[in-house]
Length: 300
Image (cartoon, rainbow, N blue to C red):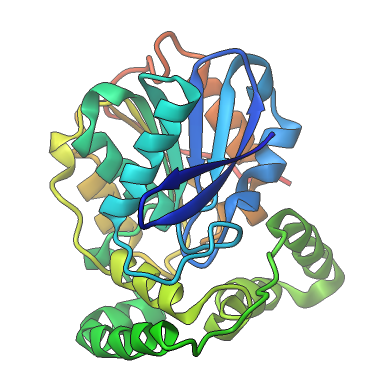
Protein backbone atom coordinates (compact mmCIF):
# COMPACT_ATOMS: atom_id res chain seq x y z
CA UNK A 1 0.00 0.00 0.00
CA UNK A 2 1.27 3.44 -0.91
CA UNK A 3 1.40 5.76 2.11
CA UNK A 4 2.65 9.21 3.05
CA UNK A 5 3.57 10.92 6.27
CA UNK A 6 3.36 14.69 6.50
CA UNK A 7 5.56 16.67 8.87
CA UNK A 8 5.34 20.42 9.28
CA UNK A 9 7.84 22.21 7.04
CA UNK A 10 9.27 19.01 5.60
CA UNK A 11 6.88 18.10 2.81
CA UNK A 12 5.38 14.61 2.37
CA UNK A 13 7.53 11.51 2.82
CA UNK A 14 6.40 8.59 0.69
CA UNK A 15 6.68 4.97 1.78
CA UNK A 16 5.33 1.56 0.83
CA UNK A 17 3.77 -0.85 3.33
CA UNK A 18 3.88 -4.52 2.41
CA UNK A 19 2.96 -7.73 4.17
CA UNK A 20 1.73 -7.95 7.73
CA UNK A 21 0.37 -8.46 10.21
CA UNK A 22 3.63 -8.83 12.04
CA UNK A 23 6.41 -6.76 13.58
CA UNK A 24 7.84 -3.87 11.60
CA UNK A 25 10.81 -4.27 9.28
CA UNK A 26 12.04 -0.91 7.92
CA UNK A 27 14.35 -0.96 4.88
CA UNK A 28 16.30 2.14 3.79
CA UNK A 29 17.97 2.83 0.46
CA UNK A 30 21.32 4.51 -0.10
CA UNK A 31 22.77 7.56 -1.80
CA UNK A 32 20.98 8.71 -4.99
CA UNK A 33 18.59 5.77 -4.70
CA UNK A 34 15.00 5.10 -3.66
CA UNK A 35 12.78 2.48 -2.07
CA UNK A 36 12.69 0.29 -5.19
CA UNK A 37 16.20 -0.81 -4.16
CA UNK A 38 14.45 -3.37 -1.90
CA UNK A 39 11.65 -4.46 -4.28
CA UNK A 40 13.38 -7.63 -5.47
CA UNK A 41 14.25 -8.77 -1.96
CA UNK A 42 10.74 -8.26 -0.65
CA UNK A 43 9.10 -9.78 -3.74
CA UNK A 44 11.23 -12.95 -3.78
CA UNK A 45 11.51 -13.59 -0.03
CA UNK A 46 9.15 -14.75 2.70
CA UNK A 47 9.46 -11.48 4.58
CA UNK A 48 5.92 -10.34 3.82
CA UNK A 49 4.53 -13.48 5.46
CA UNK A 50 6.06 -12.67 8.84
CA UNK A 51 6.73 -8.91 8.88
CA UNK A 52 5.08 -5.61 8.10
CA UNK A 53 7.67 -4.25 5.68
CA UNK A 54 7.96 -0.45 5.49
CA UNK A 55 10.10 0.95 2.67
CA UNK A 56 10.38 4.76 2.46
CA UNK A 57 11.83 7.05 -0.15
CA UNK A 58 14.02 9.15 2.11
CA UNK A 59 13.18 12.83 2.18
CA UNK A 60 14.63 14.43 -0.95
CA UNK A 61 14.56 11.25 -3.05
CA UNK A 62 12.10 9.94 -5.66
CA UNK A 63 8.47 10.40 -4.54
CA UNK A 64 9.57 12.19 -1.33
CA UNK A 65 10.73 15.14 -3.40
CA UNK A 66 12.14 17.94 -1.24
CA UNK A 67 14.79 20.56 -1.91
CA UNK A 68 15.36 22.00 1.56
CA UNK A 69 18.19 21.31 3.99
CA UNK A 70 18.29 17.71 5.15
CA UNK A 71 20.58 15.72 7.46
CA UNK A 72 20.53 12.19 8.82
CA UNK A 73 18.75 13.45 11.92
CA UNK A 74 15.86 14.59 9.71
CA UNK A 75 15.65 11.21 7.99
CA UNK A 76 15.67 9.48 11.38
CA UNK A 77 12.88 11.74 12.65
CA UNK A 78 10.85 10.92 9.52
CA UNK A 79 11.26 7.21 10.29
CA UNK A 80 10.09 7.69 13.87
CA UNK A 81 7.01 9.53 12.55
CA UNK A 82 6.37 6.69 10.09
CA UNK A 83 6.48 4.10 12.89
CA UNK A 84 4.15 6.23 14.99
CA UNK A 85 1.71 6.55 12.11
CA UNK A 86 1.74 2.80 11.57
CA UNK A 87 1.34 2.09 15.29
CA UNK A 88 4.68 0.37 15.95
CA UNK A 89 6.70 0.98 19.10
CA UNK A 90 9.79 -0.73 17.69
CA UNK A 91 11.19 -2.35 14.56
CA UNK A 92 14.07 -4.12 12.91
CA UNK A 93 15.69 -1.51 10.72
CA UNK A 94 17.98 -2.20 7.80
CA UNK A 95 19.76 -0.03 5.30
CA UNK A 96 22.08 -0.13 2.32
CA UNK A 97 25.07 2.20 1.91
CA UNK A 98 24.06 5.63 3.27
CA UNK A 99 20.82 4.01 4.45
CA UNK A 100 22.84 1.71 6.71
CA UNK A 101 24.41 4.77 8.34
CA UNK A 102 20.97 6.32 8.83
CA UNK A 103 19.71 3.07 10.39
CA UNK A 104 22.65 3.06 12.81
CA UNK A 105 22.04 6.69 13.77
CA UNK A 106 18.37 5.87 14.35
CA UNK A 107 19.41 3.03 16.67
CA UNK A 108 21.62 5.40 18.68
CA UNK A 109 18.90 8.03 19.02
CA UNK A 110 16.03 5.65 19.79
CA UNK A 111 17.62 2.43 21.13
CA UNK A 112 14.36 1.17 22.63
CA UNK A 113 12.67 1.38 19.24
CA UNK A 114 15.20 -0.96 17.55
CA UNK A 115 15.08 -4.71 18.13
CA UNK A 116 17.69 -5.41 15.44
CA UNK A 117 19.88 -3.80 12.76
CA UNK A 118 20.75 -4.95 9.24
CA UNK A 119 23.67 -3.00 7.76
CA UNK A 120 24.40 -3.70 4.10
CA UNK A 121 27.65 -2.05 2.99
CA UNK A 122 27.67 0.81 5.54
CA UNK A 123 29.84 3.76 4.54
CA UNK A 124 32.68 4.68 6.92
CA UNK A 125 34.44 7.82 5.78
CA UNK A 126 37.75 6.66 7.26
CA UNK A 127 37.63 3.54 5.07
CA UNK A 128 36.56 5.16 1.79
CA UNK A 129 38.68 4.46 -1.28
CA UNK A 130 38.57 5.46 -4.94
CA UNK A 131 36.57 8.51 -6.00
CA UNK A 132 34.74 8.75 -2.68
CA UNK A 133 38.03 8.60 -0.81
CA UNK A 134 39.30 11.52 -2.85
CA UNK A 135 36.05 13.39 -2.34
CA UNK A 136 36.28 12.88 1.42
CA UNK A 137 39.45 14.98 1.42
CA UNK A 138 37.71 17.69 -0.61
CA UNK A 139 34.36 17.66 1.18
CA UNK A 140 34.84 21.24 2.38
CA UNK A 141 34.12 22.30 -1.20
CA UNK A 142 30.69 20.68 -1.16
CA UNK A 143 29.14 23.05 1.39
CA UNK A 144 29.49 26.28 -0.63
CA UNK A 145 28.29 24.39 -3.71
CA UNK A 146 25.27 23.20 -1.73
CA UNK A 147 24.56 26.73 -0.51
CA UNK A 148 24.53 28.03 -4.08
CA UNK A 149 22.24 25.18 -5.19
CA UNK A 150 19.77 25.74 -2.33
CA UNK A 151 19.70 29.47 -3.10
CA UNK A 152 18.97 28.73 -6.74
CA UNK A 153 16.16 26.37 -5.75
CA UNK A 154 14.70 29.04 -3.46
CA UNK A 155 14.27 31.48 -6.37
CA UNK A 156 12.71 28.81 -8.60
CA UNK A 157 15.73 27.52 -10.51
CA UNK A 158 15.17 23.78 -10.39
CA UNK A 159 14.34 20.85 -12.60
CA UNK A 160 10.74 19.67 -12.57
CA UNK A 161 9.24 16.30 -13.32
CA UNK A 162 12.22 14.16 -12.38
CA UNK A 163 11.69 10.50 -13.35
CA UNK A 164 11.73 7.80 -10.67
CA UNK A 165 14.35 5.12 -11.30
CA UNK A 166 13.14 1.50 -10.99
CA UNK A 167 16.17 -0.17 -9.44
CA UNK A 168 14.76 -3.68 -9.70
CA UNK A 169 14.48 -3.29 -13.47
CA UNK A 170 17.92 -1.67 -13.62
CA UNK A 171 19.39 -4.64 -11.75
CA UNK A 172 17.84 -7.09 -14.21
CA UNK A 173 19.15 -5.11 -17.16
CA UNK A 174 22.63 -4.88 -15.65
CA UNK A 175 22.79 -8.62 -14.97
CA UNK A 176 21.83 -9.32 -18.58
CA UNK A 177 24.66 -7.10 -19.78
CA UNK A 178 27.11 -8.79 -17.44
CA UNK A 179 26.12 -12.21 -18.79
CA UNK A 180 26.50 -10.89 -22.33
CA UNK A 181 30.12 -10.01 -21.63
CA UNK A 182 30.06 -6.42 -20.37
CA UNK A 183 31.45 -7.54 -16.99
CA UNK A 184 32.14 -5.00 -14.28
CA UNK A 185 31.77 -2.12 -16.74
CA UNK A 186 28.03 -2.80 -16.77
CA UNK A 187 28.02 -2.09 -13.03
CA UNK A 188 30.31 0.89 -12.86
CA UNK A 189 28.74 2.74 -15.80
CA UNK A 190 25.28 2.65 -14.24
CA UNK A 191 25.84 2.51 -10.47
CA UNK A 192 29.09 4.41 -10.14
CA UNK A 193 28.26 7.41 -12.32
CA UNK A 194 27.17 10.69 -10.66
CA UNK A 195 25.89 11.95 -14.02
CA UNK A 196 23.57 8.95 -14.23
CA UNK A 197 22.40 9.50 -10.64
CA UNK A 198 21.66 13.17 -11.22
CA UNK A 199 19.13 12.33 -13.92
CA UNK A 200 16.83 11.17 -11.12
CA UNK A 201 17.83 13.17 -8.03
CA UNK A 202 17.76 16.93 -7.32
CA UNK A 203 21.28 18.34 -7.15
CA UNK A 204 20.66 19.68 -3.64
CA UNK A 205 19.53 16.24 -2.43
CA UNK A 206 22.51 14.57 -4.06
CA UNK A 207 25.00 16.97 -2.46
CA UNK A 208 23.42 16.56 0.96
CA UNK A 209 23.47 12.79 0.59
CA UNK A 210 27.17 13.00 -0.26
CA UNK A 211 27.86 15.17 2.78
CA UNK A 212 26.08 12.69 5.04
CA UNK A 213 27.98 9.80 3.43
CA UNK A 214 31.24 11.62 4.19
CA UNK A 215 30.21 12.43 7.76
CA UNK A 216 32.05 10.45 10.47
CA UNK A 217 29.92 7.97 12.39
CA UNK A 218 29.70 7.93 16.21
CA UNK A 219 31.34 5.02 18.08
CA UNK A 220 29.84 1.71 17.01
CA UNK A 221 30.35 0.17 20.44
CA UNK A 222 27.48 2.32 21.73
CA UNK A 223 24.90 0.46 19.60
CA UNK A 224 23.49 -2.38 21.67
CA UNK A 225 21.02 -3.87 19.17
CA UNK A 226 21.79 -7.25 17.58
CA UNK A 227 23.31 -6.43 14.20
CA UNK A 228 23.80 -8.27 10.91
CA UNK A 229 26.55 -6.69 8.77
CA UNK A 230 26.90 -7.63 5.10
CA UNK A 231 30.08 -6.41 3.39
CA UNK A 232 31.52 -6.73 -0.10
CA UNK A 233 34.88 -8.42 -0.62
CA UNK A 234 35.76 -5.75 -3.21
CA UNK A 235 37.27 -2.43 -2.19
CA UNK A 236 35.85 -0.02 -4.78
CA UNK A 237 34.49 2.32 -2.11
CA UNK A 238 35.80 0.95 1.18
CA UNK A 239 38.86 -0.79 2.61
CA UNK A 240 37.54 -4.15 3.81
CA UNK A 241 40.05 -4.69 6.60
CA UNK A 242 39.23 -1.37 8.24
CA UNK A 243 35.49 -1.99 7.90
CA UNK A 244 35.74 -5.40 9.55
CA UNK A 245 37.87 -4.16 12.44
CA UNK A 246 35.71 -1.14 13.11
CA UNK A 247 32.32 -2.83 12.83
CA UNK A 248 33.55 -5.65 15.08
CA UNK A 249 33.19 -3.05 17.87
CA UNK A 250 29.44 -3.62 17.75
CA UNK A 251 28.60 -5.49 20.98
CA UNK A 252 26.27 -8.04 19.32
CA UNK A 253 27.14 -8.57 15.70
CA UNK A 254 27.37 -11.04 12.86
CA UNK A 255 29.62 -9.97 9.96
CA UNK A 256 29.33 -11.71 6.60
CA UNK A 257 31.60 -10.89 3.65
CA UNK A 258 30.10 -11.61 0.23
CA UNK A 259 32.00 -11.85 -3.03
CA UNK A 260 30.92 -8.61 -4.68
CA UNK A 261 32.47 -5.41 -5.92
CA UNK A 262 30.16 -3.10 -4.00
CA UNK A 263 26.57 -3.59 -5.19
CA UNK A 264 25.38 -6.64 -3.24
CA UNK A 265 21.73 -6.21 -4.24
CA UNK A 266 22.75 -6.45 -7.90
CA UNK A 267 25.62 -8.92 -7.68
CA UNK A 268 24.44 -11.31 -4.96
CA UNK A 269 20.63 -11.08 -4.62
CA UNK A 270 20.18 -14.72 -3.56
CA UNK A 271 22.86 -14.50 -0.88
CA UNK A 272 21.46 -11.20 0.37
CA UNK A 273 18.01 -12.73 0.73
CA UNK A 274 19.26 -15.92 2.40
CA UNK A 275 21.39 -14.15 5.02
CA UNK A 276 18.66 -11.66 5.92
CA UNK A 277 15.96 -14.33 6.12
CA UNK A 278 18.12 -16.64 8.25
CA UNK A 279 19.16 -13.86 10.60
CA UNK A 280 15.60 -12.61 11.03
CA UNK A 281 14.45 -16.15 11.78
CA UNK A 282 16.28 -16.01 15.11
CA UNK A 283 14.25 -15.43 18.25
CA UNK A 284 14.94 -12.60 18.82
CA UNK A 285 16.36 -11.62 15.40
CA UNK A 286 20.10 -12.03 15.42
CA UNK A 287 20.15 -14.73 18.09
CA UNK A 288 23.57 -16.01 17.01
CA UNK A 289 26.91 -16.10 18.83
CA UNK A 290 28.13 -12.53 19.28
CA UNK A 291 31.17 -11.64 17.22
CA UNK A 292 30.58 -14.33 14.60
CA UNK A 293 32.21 -13.61 11.24
CA UNK A 294 32.15 -15.57 8.02
CA UNK A 295 33.29 -15.33 4.41
CA UNK A 296 30.25 -16.40 2.42
CA UNK A 297 30.71 -18.42 -0.76
CA UNK A 298 29.89 -16.97 -4.16
CA UNK A 299 26.40 -17.48 -5.50
CA UNK A 300 25.32 -17.72 -9.12
